[in-house]
Image 1 (spheres, rainbow over the protein chains, first blue to last red):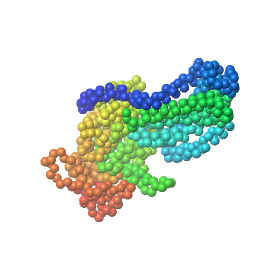
Image 2: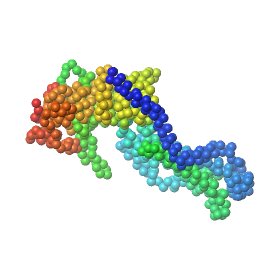
Image 3: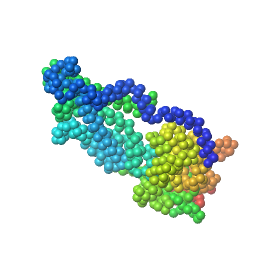
Image 4: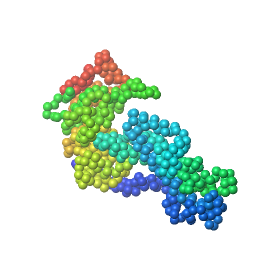
Length: 304
Length: 329
């Protein structure tokens, strides 16, 4: 093995340099670094973290019980109730804080369900191709051609408008977009030589799909999922606004907005509808900024 | 159907009448309107311990042949018999098992390693997947193989993008080698590397062959690389083998006009030796979707006669086989 040894000596100085550079520039670190350069994304991350923290520690930070009638009906903000009270006399700030729990669990829960469904179906369609692909892609087309809001309204009214049902319905209907993205990525990645090498090495098909192909299409999945959370929050708000969402007395940003349906509230009691509207805006914007930053950070072509 | 008769050597792999056609689809209902005959009736016997090279210009079907042999793109027709078993008849479990003896090294070292896996995991994976080695032994085996291909064990925690092309190719070789295969299909393993690294990798392959009694099917597009490493050379043209002989016979006494033209395309470094007249081929390779009648080379052949345009020549000869109506020499 004399030749091989000669090679080693030649390469070691070079690879030592690479070792120092390489150790610092691992993939995750590179992405983190790029993400942190994106100012709006970092701002989004901070705001989103604050919302999560307030949702987690809601009992500690909310000034009073969100379900207790503790003041006048629809009272304007005062020292006692910082954001005033709603039309039943409950503290609005407390309800706003507790509502973030509902909105976030709808967002994260629905997206978690549909990312799993979409990824698995997309991977199967892309990897196996032929009639399997045909069937799954036509199914996706069918799901994509539903009038989304109508179907959700119908399903929720059949299953009953409760938090878990909304999560399940949104999750079961949201997968087609991710399914298409994953299929596309898998189609291109399965032709890569390292996947062929996996086949030649005799790995099982699930191992090839889940350990060699899917980790390499993580970036588009992750980006799509962040935007999906924002969409699901808006969808829950719309459902609640239409009265098919989370039912009172449980607070959600959407059903708090429902109270703004009357003209008097809209024109003379802004404390009832501006704060929940602002929260939806903040949550969705912060998530979208994060998604943007993540997309740029994971795009190998944006070399900075 | 062995083309080269040899009593003392045992065939490791036999390729019989291998055909690989790719359908050409058109229209909204993707009707098959034709077929690209990438490999069209190829016979080849590979004996244990030898290096046989498959040479030909781009698009002649040499990589397709290699991929069909390791069953990455299964053949349309014909048989690939490895260690006495016909690969296409095996169940997927049996095939997975036999793959441990039949490996491939890819051309492009940049796309042949999973960018998300550390080198250590990449090399340990085959051993773990086939449960060939005790878990405690795996790490030591990976260290060994890295040393054999000229890398160190501290490379184990690195990702592929941290290596140069030559180093990556050696990782690819290590990965093919770690299951201790009998036959390795080398699909242009040095074409993507620069010349100085080419020599390193070729030397490494040669050393490994001695140490582990490997058999190589070496695919290349030029004769230069191949001269150094092979025992026998098969020249391919448009999906068929047109000449197959020992390396020195091919270089000293080429019998097919195409082989001769390929040899003329191989540069001679010493200007004083450049006395010979050069044959430069005219035209392009005919489309494999619509191969010419008769001998597939007749359109570019300086010696073509009427019979060449109507009748395809068969491979003839014992040790030195050639498919030509009017062989040279």
